[in-house]
Structures are given as structure tokens and as C-alpha cells.
Length: 204
Image (cartoon, rainbow, N blue to C red; front, side):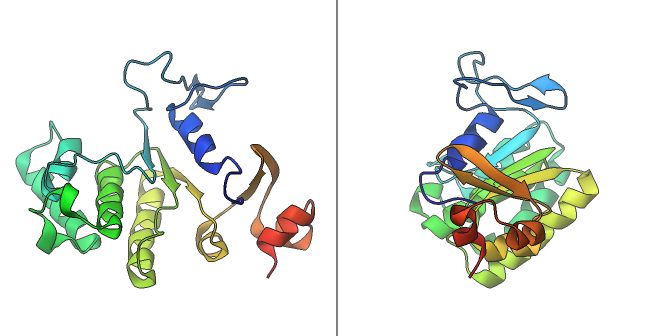
């Protein structure tokens, strides 16, 4: 969590390998994560990032967008996974619509479906439910939590909503001006906030 402009999205992009670091290093499973200056195709194979840009194939259908992630899989398996994700995101009736015709909320659902079609070791979510109603948000995140346990995977969520932290996070990190000012459980942070900035974010 952190106020707008504090560096939350930049941090996710650095973790994923979309931005080069000015200093320091990021490691994942004991391997260094390198940015676009070192990679022809930026990003990390064992991670998926859902950000505000969505990174969708604009002139392809919803079905084709999800299928694009599943290249190389058997057709029957591919159809099964895609149909499951279309039902989860309540996009079944829109499956043949082109992404360019969708609303922000619909695009957000497609981006989430693409990210979890092949479940990653690390899922990075940048305000992933900002355009979804609370019922659909709970439905999708319950599914993601189940998959995290099944795959023994991890998830880092950028959010400005405290309720999302309370319902899901093992740890809460507070960012200000590009620095992590406190990292702990919500319960401990609420009991002993590091400073007035942290206190303003976690206390009603």
C-alpha cells in the first residue's frame, strides 16, 4: 500500500523485469531478475503481471487472447481451461468479442484470466479489481487464493484498499517516495505504525 506516486507500480515492474534498476538487485528463486537492457523479451517466465496497461491483443477476441498463453497445449485441455476462466470472470457470452470493443472492467477480467491460465510461481497484481464489482472481485480472488495454495505460489498485490489487505495478505508493505517504510503483518502495523504516514493508511 501507499499513496499515489509512492512507487508501488514501479516496484512491481522492477520485480517482473520490465524496468532496469538504478541500484540494488532483485532475485527470484536464487536467480537474478534482469531488466529490458539485458533481455530481448522483458519479463520473467515464472511470473505474471496484471497492470493497468493490461497488455492484451487488441484486435483479437477474448477467447484468442487467453488461447495465446496456452500455445503448445492439447486442444481439449486448452478449451477446458479457457471455458473455466470465462465462467470465472463471467465473460462466456463475450468470448468472441474483440478486446478493442471492451470496457475497462471487461478488459481487466480478460487480463486476469490470461495471467492465471498457466498459473505462475509469482503473481503480480496492480490494482487488479479496481473496475470490478465486489461480488465478482470476491469470486475471482477466492479462485486465485485456492490456486496459490495448490501451486504453492505467491502473490504480491498493489492496492489502495485496506479491505483487500485485511481479507488476503499475510504481510503488508507500506511504501512512501520509493522506499519501503514498514513491512509486517497488518495486526502488528496497526498496533505500532512506524510513523504518521503509515498510521494514516492503516487506521480509520
